[in-house]
Amino acid sequence: MKKIWGSLCVAATTAMMLVGCNHEQSDEKIHIEFFQNKSEAVSTFDHLIERFEKEHPNIEIEQNHVPDADTVLRTRLVKEDVPDIMAIGGNATYGDIAEEGLLYDFSEDPAIEKVIPDYVNMINLLGQTNKENNGIPFATNANMVLYNKAKFQELGLQIPKTWDELIDVAERIKKEGEVPFYFTYKDAWTAMIPFNALAGNLQGDRFIQERNENKTTFKERYKETSEKMLTLLKYGHKDNFGRDYNAGNQAFANGESVMYLQGNWAMASIKSINPNIELGTFPLPVSNDQSKNKLVSGVDTALTMSKDTEHKKEALMFINFLLEQENAQYYIQEQNSFSAVKDVLQNDPALKDLNPYFEQQKITSFPDHYFPASMQVANLVQEFLLKGEVEPFLNKLDREWNKIKERE
Image (tube, rainbow, N blue to C red):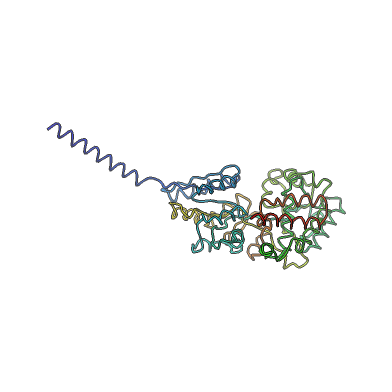
């Protein structure tokens, strides 16, 4: 009897353990990797993840940010080790990944209807042979002229709406003994700010497609861009090629120039140096036809996911959560960026002036987002500005482009 009782106890205990195990298994959290490439956005995403997990306690989102994220992601994709969800830049790297056919197609997903169509078109151009919508634009950035409102008021200046008005403003600032623009061309990438602002408006919307088809050249379409870059250089300071980005932020924050050609990403640094500075912004007016002057803006962060994730439903839930207006608004306020989500606009006093361009969709993309990374165009532009020779520069752009395309 003792043996039978003992056996029954063991059986009952085992059954209870199995029931317990099954119960624990049903309560296990679904674990999802969220790979993102911006170190400055880690804490912002941490907060959003915390919000999401409170609403969905059975889902655990693990944010993964690593140095040199683009290289790490490319390496993982070669091994077909694709993260569940990704937030990556809308540049050539995104285009290369989309072409590999590893990403989810959002074409039929209602999430893509939540964002401004121009930005969807921008990233779709990056994966030119892939006709799928493999990413959803989330956060955007923009080139602009930052200006010191106090100095503008002191000098009696109005925001220029045309190229001639811009040059007139620069001339008036110079005559007053002030520096119109603070250039930081020691860092080659900063030369891309005026390059993109000018070319984005002047090259024509179909330049990249037509260049790929050998229907046009840089020599044909980039002459005005190049000449106007040299004109702007006349209104810099005494050492345009000896100062880097950080020095430029410091100098502008301290009132050493009236205007500063940069992007929204510089604002946090400038304000940290001088919290009292009153900043204003306007797009660089590159044409004398106001209707042709658009804001150069690109996809800073695109949301995408693996087409083979085991947690498709939950991954889509998180992406849709990020696209909710309240969450998209939180992100852009924290990051001093703009949103690709419809009707989500900047409240920052310095950036509000640009809202009409987003509302009216008067935006055009960063030309260099479509250049092959190996072309190293920033170095070519920096060299051109140092030498000041337009025709050799344009010939070199065409030669370098052709070399890369021939190797593909």
